[in-house]
Length: 417
Image 1 (cartoon, rainbow, N blue to C red):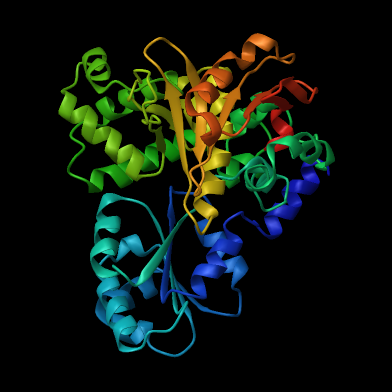
Image 2: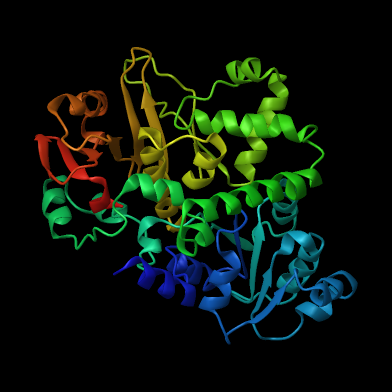
């Protein structure tokens, strides 16, 4: 499929990996909340999936906003399922939603969307406790951009015996479209710049507007941000250090900010679904482990725009992480993603802990010809965790697929993502 064909298809419908999980939740819970960063496609998703099946009201519509403030019960009344878009504009509306649920509990009656911020999430938690299920819509994955509406092969890898991984990946009808990870990192995953813009100059304008909206509109609603220039300096420092360990004390010292301020700003970025912190895998099997989280971004295009840097290895790690994150958050049963690092310097980029307690260690290399030495850290991890650890997966930028050792499979990153 040519890229222009992809763009045309995605203009018609932004099929997303969370679609099936969203429908399952609507079949069970009286309310489902779809949240995430601005411009991830929440409104497009809920309108495209449920056209003519649900009433739809957006709080961006001034008439609807007025009705929500003056007479919320009338707005919410009726038997037809209701989608309420951008509910962060009327947090008090959630109390009326709670009353309607308690009066008549109907699965899937309310579908709420909203850009995440601390005010909204606190209101949701207080008003809809036990009444709602939550889904996060992240920026698009590579396969979503190709019109496939899914993420990488993580589910298949976890449910397939390690000995069958090679056959699984060889049989996968992987497309070579968008297999230049550097270009993929530059365009990012926000639907508009990723799929509707043709060059870096257009995307730079879009990213700049996105940052200004986030800084000047969203964050000014939160009294926690005293200085937008300081906040922007912190954002840039985190983008430059993408994929690194986040030491708040060092970060505060380098930026000349109080540590408490850095801590608060990091939490704001994470709550806004822009910053993604990967915790350390903390089970000690005889080695001293570093417990510091690693920091990534939900969108590589935005991070590279803020840093002004060219994509390097951490950007490819970031692409893999966000594909893993979309997979994780679209599942009914929660898995976790960690990193592993010892004080002696051994490290594994990502460790997936499945619901059965098994561990999948993943290393990412930008080289096109993986070498035996590239398997050392994966094998060190496996030696520490024994039967609990699956075989190691080494993703690289080449074409070759095969076993580097009896317990480490090397595969092109684009065969999995």
